[in-house]
Amino acid sequence: MAASPAAPRHRNTLRGQAAIIGIGLSPVGKVPGQSPLALTATAAQYALADAGLTKADIDGVLSSHAMASPFHRFSVAFSEYFGLQPTFSNTLQVSGATAATMFNIAAAAIHGGLAETILIAAGDSLLTGMTPELALRSLTESRDQQYEMPFGIPVANTFAMTAHRHMREFGTTPEQLAQVAVSQRHHASRMPGAQQTSPITVDDVLASKMVTTPYHKLDCSLISDGGAAFVLTSAERAKALGVRKPIYILGGGECYTHEHIFLMPSLTVTGAVESSRRAYAMAGYWAKDMQVAGVYDCFTGTVIMMLEDLGFCPKGEGGRFVADGQMTYGGQIPSNTHGGLLSFAHSGIPGSLFHFHEVVAQLRGDCGERQVAGAELGLVHSLGAGFATNATTILGTENTL
Amino acid sequence: MITVEEARRKPEPSPDADSAALWKGLREGRLLLQHCGRCGHVQYYQQAFCRNCGSAELTHRAASGQGTVHSFSVVHRAPGPAFKDDVPYAVLLVELDEGPRMISTYTGGPADEVTFDMRVALICEPISDTISLPRFRKA
Image 1 (cartoon, rainbow over the protein chains, first blue to last red):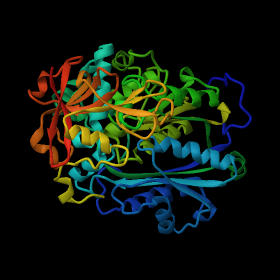
Image 2 (cartoon, rainbow over the protein chains, first blue to last red; image 1 turned 30 degrees about the vertical axis):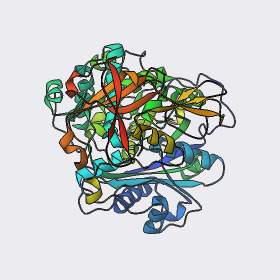
Image 3 (cartoon, rainbow over the protein chains, first blue to last red; image 1 turned 90 degrees about the horizontal axis):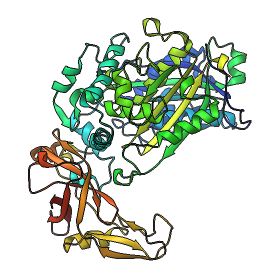
Image 4 (cartoon, one colour; image 1 turned 90 degrees about the vertical axis):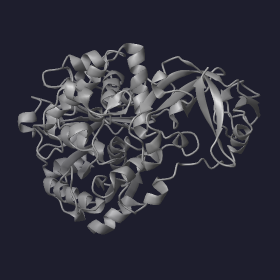
């Protein structure tokens, strides 16, 4: 049973104005012979079928850049590929945070009249579309060419330095970091199509090869192929269409605190505090009301820091919170129940769309043995570029409006 | 998308209009910081305006070159072929005594001797005819 909204609604926000009425996934993991556009189109076909609509119903397209695709305007290239001529479109780029911004912007565009029915669709093929070294190097390219890249700083390193400092300040342990990977692997074992499903232990994580301290290989997210797509429309149209279980966007918030890791205001407190505060305020719900979450998990320590900054536990307590089983079934906030970027799939910028797919499926009650019983309110937090970019979206069923 | 050939080369900074003085200073063995004449803010890297107050009244002064390790991470798996021969190497987030932080790498000793809050000192290491990288050794 969901809580009641706690704060007065702001009449002019996007709260409850737009609903997710269709979701779709391409095959993920190792998917050879499928271009990023093909993966995206596959997911989009599923999402349209799920919504019971055809492409003629779509007037807006939002997407993100694909590294293994030559197109600079992926949303425009995708529209052509899919046979669409939308009157609202953009290719968004705030690294890993892009996914949540797509939902926030789509809801705002629907609320503001720029489009009525928007297809959010993205995919990339980082595993088979590029060599692993080029994929990694491309991620490095996202760091500054004068002040960061010359020092051989992988994107992993920026996140590693934040987790390392967190360990220094709060006594977070390698075992606690590893527990995130263990819990999520367990989740993935019940997720059809997940890339990694074999059970792992804390010792397995600690025994896996060191990548960049404090992160071992199993503390790091996967490199994958895959795409996801969603159909969003106005609350009115969702009602008129008689959609079985529309999932509403209740709140959105973003925060951008720096570009260079050396200008991050604090290595252990991130922009997720502000992005989630804004999203909660718009929704009128708070961390304690959330029943399921998708928490960006490029690395294990990232999840621990986010569970704190999203308000699920006090600052510095994230390691103990995770070790205590609070991020899995029976705990305070079951998170990344599909396995996340660590075990389900991580196809670059589209990776966080998989968290949306899972949280929407949970709120619809469609998750079978993964189902979090009675979940009606959920959150997805996307972030990227060494915590430079943070975006939060709060989702809920009709009962939570 | 970059080519395989490009991935084998270490990225070399290309100074721009904002950063020309910084890289010229490093070539001469000095790490220049910008000091704001209006609000006193000290900043790294260099740009046309003070990030705190927006003033263009900025002067360059050489840093002491002394700092502490605020955080670090020892890279065991290189980010691409160009850095493969260097592992393990310690990437440092150095807090300079003047306040600003910067990214660098540890030199002059094994990566595993780096610790939190360790005192470090600047070394300007030439990597080409025009570019020297600011690196740090144990103070």
